[in-house]
Length: 185
Image (cartoon, rainbow, N blue to C red; front, side, top):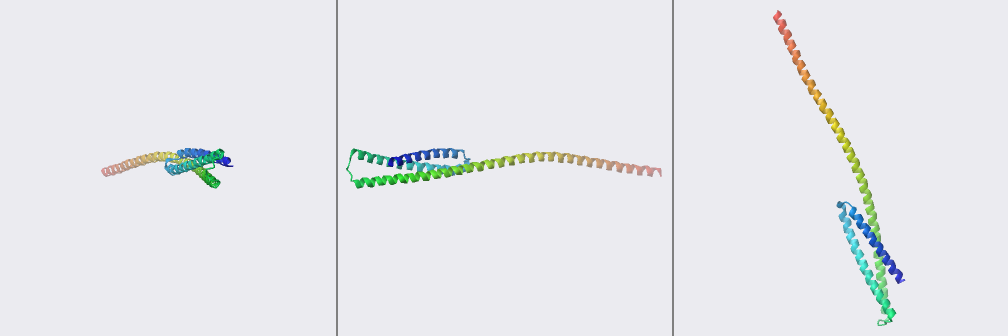
């Protein structure tokens, strides 16, 4: 039973290590603006993982010492002390297992949050690309509008110049007509 529990804890430790490595890779791909918060979480998860590993190693060492004493027939301690020691080690293993499971759950939740963030970033990227395309179209339309307005302004200026010239010609013609009519009388 103890060997199975030790093997189970070792397996969970390995899975937790792999998950932490995957999460670390995911955090490195997150944009720098939001990477800080996840980097802090990763550090705390790694510290917690280190604590769990050291607790597990201590428990294993204590367990192996007990097994060695049993095999060698070392009855230096009373059976009550050995039983209490075994129960204490079993409790430590169970606490470590619970911590590992909690760490695993946190890792899974963090991975889900990371996936959601990546999806949100993907959607935001698409929105930004669509907005850029609209801006390019608007810029092209503004360029066309500017060229049309410039052409219209040239025509307006040309028309005004023509009107002024025609007005001057009409005034000169009227003045000439008046002078010719005054000279005839």
